[in-house]
Length: 253
Ligand code: MN
Figure 1 (tube, rainbow, N blue to C red):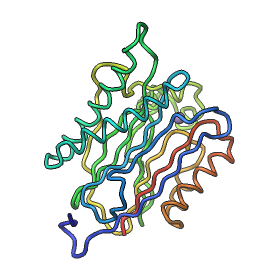
Figure 2: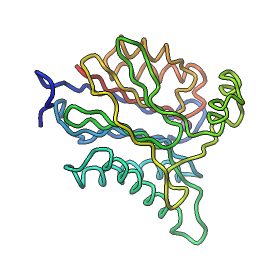
Figure 3: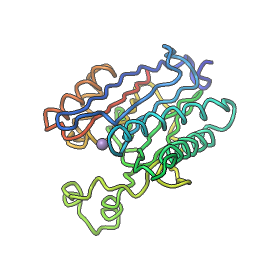
Figure 4: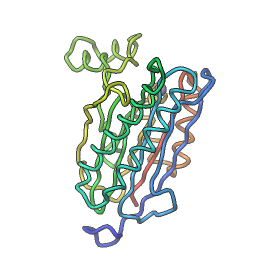
């Protein structure tokens, strides 16, 4: 299907990279781009980043499970309103991870963040739970499209903590919302401004936290999506690689 509201169809360029980092022994982050086949002008695409949490192997299972469940639910009803499809996709992801955690005698501690960008026809949509992030980069600059579902970010927004205090806070990664922790989940879903030629979207896990938004902006502008994703992951690793890191870049051309 072609993009409807433009004189010529927009081309979607995609790149992504995930890495274990320099400290952790396993990578519990994951990402997906659906449909998986090369379809730069496909009019219904879903991009997802998830950062899993849990004991040995459970975090990785949580992020993989969430992405797979979200993909299935999102494409199960291709004709519905996109915001509704995203909400159902995240609810399905939440329930599947929750049930996975509760199959044994003792519930496992597992969960995941999940941030998704949907491009459908001439529209862009976002769904988000946790502290992975989405940014928009274009000629005007870079803007963060998500807010972190962390206690520290809530305190920062209330003015209890300054920006600098929030960035260094020891509890800055403690989430107030995640996929798979409870039977239900509140999902942030919204329609974005329609994508235009020159726009780029970036989804990332919190492993990118030591790379500034100005650096993200400059690298995404200068490079192809794949090069940008790789350079940003390298930069996170050069600054310690304290966490798994995942970067997904979508450019509209
Ligand atoms: Mn992380």
